[in-house]
Length: 186
Image (cartoon, rainbow, N blue to C red; front, side, top):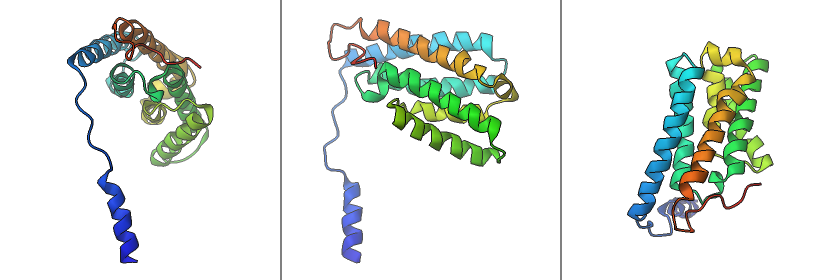
Protein backbone atom coordinates (compact mmCIF):
# COMPACT_ATOMS: atom_id res chain seq x y z
CA UNK A 1 0.00 0.00 0.00
CA UNK A 2 2.80 2.43 0.94
CA UNK A 3 4.71 1.53 -2.25
CA UNK A 4 1.67 2.38 -4.39
CA UNK A 5 1.31 5.67 -2.56
CA UNK A 6 4.98 6.53 -3.19
CA UNK A 7 4.62 5.68 -6.89
CA UNK A 8 1.64 7.99 -6.97
CA UNK A 9 3.59 10.80 -5.26
CA UNK A 10 6.52 10.39 -7.70
CA UNK A 11 4.17 11.21 -10.59
CA UNK A 12 4.08 14.74 -9.22
CA UNK A 13 7.81 15.27 -9.71
CA UNK A 14 7.45 16.12 -13.38
CA UNK A 15 9.51 14.46 -16.06
CA UNK A 16 10.91 17.27 -18.20
CA UNK A 17 13.16 20.24 -17.79
CA UNK A 18 11.47 23.65 -17.75
CA UNK A 19 11.52 25.30 -21.21
CA UNK A 20 13.67 28.40 -21.79
CA UNK A 21 12.23 31.91 -21.83
CA UNK A 22 10.73 32.97 -25.15
CA UNK A 23 12.72 35.34 -27.40
CA UNK A 24 12.30 39.05 -26.69
CA UNK A 25 10.64 39.64 -30.08
CA UNK A 26 7.90 37.12 -29.25
CA UNK A 27 7.36 38.81 -25.89
CA UNK A 28 6.96 42.20 -27.61
CA UNK A 29 4.45 40.84 -30.14
CA UNK A 30 2.50 39.30 -27.26
CA UNK A 31 2.50 42.64 -25.44
CA UNK A 32 1.30 44.55 -28.49
CA UNK A 33 -1.56 42.16 -29.23
CA UNK A 34 -2.71 42.00 -25.61
CA UNK A 35 -2.54 45.78 -25.22
CA UNK A 36 -4.56 46.48 -28.37
CA UNK A 37 -7.10 43.70 -27.82
CA UNK A 38 -7.85 44.55 -24.19
CA UNK A 39 -7.85 48.30 -24.85
CA UNK A 40 -10.37 48.01 -27.68
CA UNK A 41 -12.77 45.72 -25.83
CA UNK A 42 -12.45 47.91 -22.71
CA UNK A 43 -13.65 50.88 -24.73
CA UNK A 44 -16.48 48.81 -26.25
CA UNK A 45 -17.56 47.51 -22.84
CA UNK A 46 -17.65 51.05 -21.43
CA UNK A 47 -20.54 51.73 -23.79
CA UNK A 48 -22.28 48.41 -23.07
CA UNK A 49 -22.07 48.06 -19.27
CA UNK A 50 -22.66 50.66 -16.61
CA UNK A 51 -21.75 48.23 -13.84
CA UNK A 52 -18.02 48.39 -13.08
CA UNK A 53 -17.95 44.85 -11.66
CA UNK A 54 -19.37 43.41 -14.90
CA UNK A 55 -16.65 45.19 -16.88
CA UNK A 56 -13.97 43.83 -14.56
CA UNK A 57 -15.33 40.28 -14.83
CA UNK A 58 -15.49 40.42 -18.62
CA UNK A 59 -12.07 41.95 -19.00
CA UNK A 60 -10.74 39.22 -16.68
CA UNK A 61 -12.19 36.51 -18.87
CA UNK A 62 -10.83 38.10 -22.03
CA UNK A 63 -7.52 38.85 -20.32
CA UNK A 64 -7.05 35.11 -20.07
CA UNK A 65 -7.91 34.82 -23.77
CA UNK A 66 -5.29 37.48 -24.50
CA UNK A 67 -2.61 35.34 -22.86
CA UNK A 68 -3.54 32.49 -25.17
CA UNK A 69 -4.12 34.18 -28.52
CA UNK A 70 -1.28 36.70 -28.27
CA UNK A 71 1.15 34.83 -26.01
CA UNK A 72 0.69 31.32 -27.41
CA UNK A 73 -1.02 31.74 -30.81
CA UNK A 74 -0.10 28.27 -32.04
CA UNK A 75 -1.74 26.20 -29.30
CA UNK A 76 -5.08 24.50 -29.86
CA UNK A 77 -6.90 26.61 -27.24
CA UNK A 78 -5.91 29.77 -29.15
CA UNK A 79 -7.39 28.92 -32.54
CA UNK A 80 -10.38 30.94 -33.84
CA UNK A 81 -12.80 28.04 -33.48
CA UNK A 82 -11.85 27.72 -29.82
CA UNK A 83 -11.85 31.43 -29.03
CA UNK A 84 -15.19 32.24 -30.65
CA UNK A 85 -16.90 28.93 -29.96
CA UNK A 86 -15.58 28.59 -26.43
CA UNK A 87 -16.75 32.03 -25.31
CA UNK A 88 -20.10 31.98 -27.12
CA UNK A 89 -21.00 28.43 -26.13
CA UNK A 90 -19.98 29.04 -22.53
CA UNK A 91 -22.03 32.23 -22.37
CA UNK A 92 -25.04 30.30 -23.72
CA UNK A 93 -24.56 27.65 -21.04
CA UNK A 94 -24.18 30.23 -18.27
CA UNK A 95 -27.26 32.21 -19.28
CA UNK A 96 -29.33 29.04 -19.65
CA UNK A 97 -28.25 27.68 -16.27
CA UNK A 98 -29.04 30.99 -14.56
CA UNK A 99 -32.44 31.36 -16.26
CA UNK A 100 -33.77 27.87 -15.82
CA UNK A 101 -32.30 26.25 -12.73
CA UNK A 102 -33.63 27.22 -9.29
CA UNK A 103 -30.48 26.72 -7.23
CA UNK A 104 -28.21 28.76 -5.03
CA UNK A 105 -25.60 30.84 -6.95
CA UNK A 106 -22.79 28.57 -5.69
CA UNK A 107 -24.45 25.51 -7.20
CA UNK A 108 -25.37 27.40 -10.38
CA UNK A 109 -21.74 28.53 -10.73
CA UNK A 110 -20.46 24.97 -10.46
CA UNK A 111 -23.09 23.69 -12.90
CA UNK A 112 -22.37 26.47 -15.42
CA UNK A 113 -18.60 26.01 -15.47
CA UNK A 114 -18.63 22.21 -15.50
CA UNK A 115 -21.34 22.07 -18.17
CA UNK A 116 -19.53 24.65 -20.30
CA UNK A 117 -16.41 22.47 -20.17
CA UNK A 118 -18.39 19.44 -21.31
CA UNK A 119 -20.07 21.44 -24.10
CA UNK A 120 -16.73 22.80 -25.31
CA UNK A 121 -15.22 19.30 -25.29
CA UNK A 122 -18.11 17.88 -27.32
CA UNK A 123 -17.93 20.68 -29.88
CA UNK A 124 -14.13 20.80 -30.14
CA UNK A 125 -14.08 24.42 -28.92
CA UNK A 126 -12.24 24.07 -25.60
CA UNK A 127 -11.01 27.52 -24.56
CA UNK A 128 -10.17 27.76 -20.84
CA UNK A 129 -11.37 31.37 -20.44
CA UNK A 130 -14.80 30.15 -21.56
CA UNK A 131 -15.23 28.72 -18.08
CA UNK A 132 -14.96 32.24 -16.68
CA UNK A 133 -17.45 33.50 -19.26
CA UNK A 134 -20.06 30.94 -18.16
CA UNK A 135 -19.41 31.93 -14.55
CA UNK A 136 -19.90 35.63 -15.32
CA UNK A 137 -23.35 34.86 -16.75
CA UNK A 138 -24.28 33.41 -13.35
CA UNK A 139 -22.54 35.75 -10.88
CA UNK A 140 -22.76 38.98 -12.87
CA UNK A 141 -24.99 41.90 -11.97
CA UNK A 142 -28.70 42.25 -12.57
CA UNK A 143 -27.77 44.07 -15.81
CA UNK A 144 -26.20 40.86 -17.16
CA UNK A 145 -29.10 38.76 -15.90
CA UNK A 146 -31.66 41.09 -17.49
CA UNK A 147 -29.77 40.99 -20.79
CA UNK A 148 -30.41 37.23 -20.93
CA UNK A 149 -29.31 35.74 -24.22
CA UNK A 150 -28.37 39.17 -25.55
CA UNK A 151 -25.31 38.87 -23.25
CA UNK A 152 -24.09 36.04 -25.49
CA UNK A 153 -23.85 38.34 -28.49
CA UNK A 154 -23.24 41.71 -26.89
CA UNK A 155 -20.66 41.82 -25.36
CA UNK A 156 -19.33 38.21 -25.43
CA UNK A 157 -19.40 37.38 -29.16
CA UNK A 158 -18.41 40.95 -30.06
CA UNK A 159 -15.46 40.91 -27.65
CA UNK A 160 -14.31 37.50 -28.89
CA UNK A 161 -14.53 38.69 -32.49
CA UNK A 162 -12.54 41.87 -31.74
CA UNK A 163 -9.85 39.92 -29.89
CA UNK A 164 -9.66 37.50 -32.83
CA UNK A 165 -9.41 40.35 -35.34
CA UNK A 166 -6.54 41.93 -33.39
CA UNK A 167 -4.84 38.51 -33.19
CA UNK A 168 -5.09 38.11 -36.96
CA UNK A 169 -3.54 41.52 -37.57
CA UNK A 170 -0.81 41.55 -34.92
CA UNK A 171 0.28 37.91 -35.03
CA UNK A 172 0.72 38.07 -38.80
CA UNK A 173 2.82 41.26 -38.73
CA UNK A 174 5.71 39.16 -37.50
CA UNK A 175 8.02 37.69 -40.12
CA UNK A 176 8.37 34.57 -37.98
CA UNK A 177 6.14 31.85 -39.53
CA UNK A 178 5.90 30.15 -36.12
CA UNK A 179 3.91 33.16 -34.94
CA UNK A 180 1.53 33.37 -37.91
CA UNK A 181 -2.10 32.93 -36.97
CA UNK A 182 -4.24 30.88 -37.16
CA UNK A 183 -3.12 27.32 -37.63
CA UNK A 184 -6.67 26.45 -38.72
CA UNK A 185 -10.17 27.93 -38.63
CA UNK A 186 -12.66 25.08 -38.26
